Image 1 (cartoon, rainbow, N blue to C red):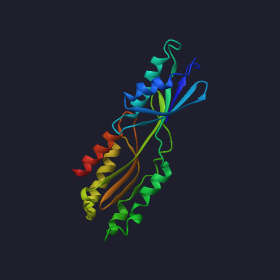
Image 2: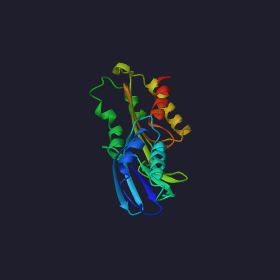
Image 3: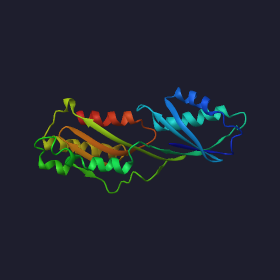
Image 4: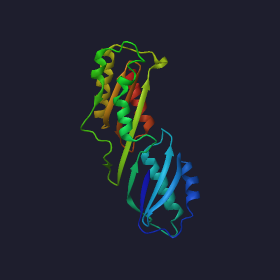
Length: 213
């Protein structure tokens, strides 16, 4: 969900078809648009995992400015609002991660008791709160799942403790907001906040490679 702020109301509103065509070249698909106020446009968009959230802002704002340049040479304020949205709300996703051990207790035989200590929740992280960059407000959150090849379980608590430590260390170094971590013998769930200049694909691959190592 992207919100842009006009310096003044646009003189026409027939730019949407052209904007959709232009942003599609950048991997940004505009699903819906609405005028919230005379000076405020809101877009619902979808992208692929390799697209950085900041690219969405650059694509929509830059290409729309180009379309209305004749009537509005300086159409927009510099600020924006960018939110990650989905069919599942944040609190439900975090609750789902928190329930992983209980949910799979009957599916995976002989889960060692030590796995209870590998479930992590950070009370200091609230992913529902907006974060701020120099020009905008954003909330870019991910729910990432890694599954072992062949879904073959590894029930060694020591091996997964190393993974637990690595994920927490990496999230601190990368300045990601790790809110929940659920580890089971055959898969890992994590919910975290990232910066708009990182693509979901890059973030996921970095953690996956570290886990594999």
